[in-house]
View 1: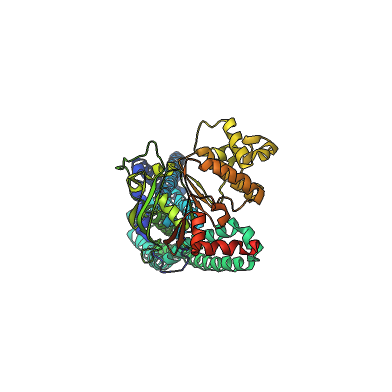
View 2: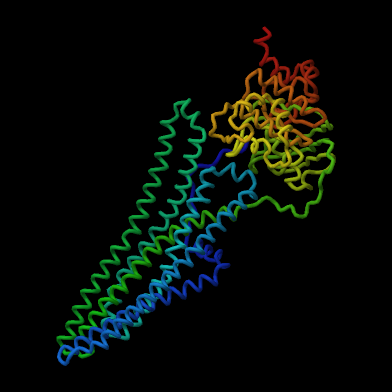
Length: 597
């Protein structure tokens, strides 16, 4: 069996700003439109920066006109120009946000598509050590986090930087002393923000990891909730969930607490700058400095607000970027996962397969340090019904997984009709087999779609014949829409009915080789007899591999391979193995001695 999924809380790799930088590189195909968005952001920010200078001019014009009369035409012109400037800024900002939202959705779509394509290229051992919920979390939660950051924070960060630079330039243009006073107060905020960013990143990394762990635990529990209920395991499941939830709570709380400090600190810095501006500005006015007027003070108050605004925006953007960096690392870790070897160069293909199968001294282990198949060899002829029996953990299912090329051999070779499966593409190998497992699988769709999965041109007459053969005909007649009735894993079907549908699916595919892994274990005795007859017809003339614990189901097998600890210890038919009185006879007698007695 594959190794258990690793849930240990080992050393966690840190996500850093490099992961976010790689995300931006992933967006390079959208670079031209992103540059347009940045230019629009710059334009909108420039309009915001120009506004206070116009307000200063407006204030000074009205103040100077108090004694001689206010020039209302000049005031009207300034007011109209202010309306135009702010309206243009609003339009440009909207354009920038629209472009970034569109780019973000396309990048998210591309990421999800890339993850989906990558999942199909990953070897099965990746999923042996990674929970389904964790994979789902990377495709959903992590991509959503990236999407939100790209949509808002990235564009806002660009606007904030432009605003910060522009406001700084304008402040020094108006009055260098007041500008230095404002910037000096803001240095406190910069220092605090740097410290907070350094301390909070590890908590954002832990949060994303634990969110994936929680999703895995939830998916595992509720996918097998009947087992949890039957064994009164709800308290244990609750404790495990509580442990993950508590760790997520701590990481999320710490990350939000630290990042949440940024905004109040920036607000305090902004308020402090207002006080210093008025203290310094009023002292200039009282001292008779003509370069500082009421309009100057008013414009500087607005500039100070605009100066603290990008600091707050940058703080919030950096918080989002930290989250996106952690999410990006998880996404790119999956995208960087080792893929199955490419097979474009492989051209071998069986056109009319007979079904001769040979195992030549194959060796395999799910991990490098633990070999579980030790030099397995067997020669099987076309049309033979081959039973693979043995105690639990002997390697029966592993042999089938290797035959299907779900895993690659450590050494040795498997050949079909003299052609190595290593020389054929995996999909070509899979096309040679029908496979019926002990665990059933149905997907959301109609009964017809479940039966004819990945095959076209199947008629109702063919469906009727197959359903009759596996004992499903009466069940189909009771369905409100026959073969077009919607079913899924959530549908109220018995395990036996699900297994019958799975068997019918394999019969419809009608491949030259057949694998049955405890195919009738979930059906009642009467249905098993019906299916067994169908199987006998199905296996006629085809090489079939039957994995069974109930040895009564393999008595008519042409060849029985007895496995123990990864080795073939006996080989022969039922009568020969019983007569030899070896391990098979011991297994058989242990199952039937009580009944026969």
